[in-house]
Length: 506
Image 1 (cartoon, helix red, strand yellow):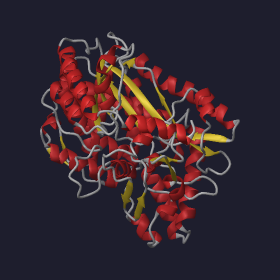
Image 2: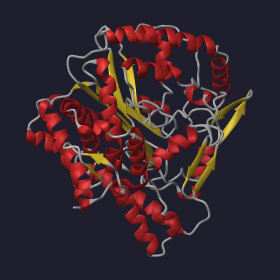
Image 3: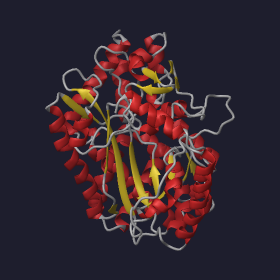
Image 4: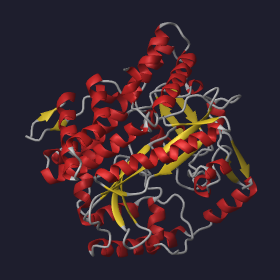
């Protein structure tokens, strides 16, 4: 699509009547509440799914690489925000022995031929929390900030041709379009800086949709320890750093910069009264309250929509609103058919992981905890929401070294890493076994993550230790970061499909 065609389509979207759109969304939400209460969104059993984002690099230089759109379609992946991004989703499967195995096998079955096909073009797909090597001949700042104005519409040069992404840069919603991180500052005119980051998103479908608030409360309480376990983006592309001593930059690095990037790019700037859209969400007392929270969220891109042939097209405006309801844990209500209609929880704090087995390990642990904690009526549910939120941002800053507050099964408060993860893994195992997995199968999914705790070593800490050692040897920061990135990619070549992160240092 040419820039002029894209600008024309953005202009059409901007002309939509926002009041009419929001009124239709409110009406659909009332119908959705009735459908949820009547059992339409219930499932006979828990269902799991996964989204996996990757970025592309030049196979020889590790520099970020734009993926030709035809190639992306050929390998069966979906386009994401940046021209370097690729995304895939697994088919929803029952939470049982075969369902989890199917999730793992589907990821591997899709990634193997995709890697082989893109290699013919000199490209490698990388599963990582943040890219650090810009395209050859460009700086990261240039790549992220480059845009043109066409007929009064701002168009991000390196963004995919999705009208939605470009419209977000031209609406009245006051997104800051900036990165504000330790020793990093960047101001853009589009959402493109968000394309720095990539994630995995496990999904868990609730068996009885009206029970979603209970599951959601538990999901918020386990968000911090799972985030701390999965941190994977401590460094930015070197040219984005301010002028500061290299050791100071290394010492001040957050373990998971993905959290701050997503928030600072898409939320309003500090001091603006507009509520943030990317945030740690509230608890809900009822499923109706969860639906109302989505309806009340600011609509960035209202669109004139017509109902299609999907079952949930009866709620097409509500679903569109939900597309920019960017909470770190969020409720979802959708289904292509009445029988497939579901209420689920999307768990969004996790960066993309070094291997498929690491990603599936998080999906299994999250699902196992969603099974066991509500059944046990675990006391962690009573953890104050403000403490759960504070835990979350502590985990983003410090990973496993952060002091997270937890309530044990016997009601005691602790910040002991051993106690917290001992309970988490035990309850995850119980939840998986309740779904028919053997103890050996459950341990197989959990083991790669347990090893991280035992060694106190996350992907982010591995990266940070590498760069810190090199900087202490007087290697320039840029060289240290790029050396780390090259080593990460080489390790991943050997383990992405057959292995786990802990294999990197055994």
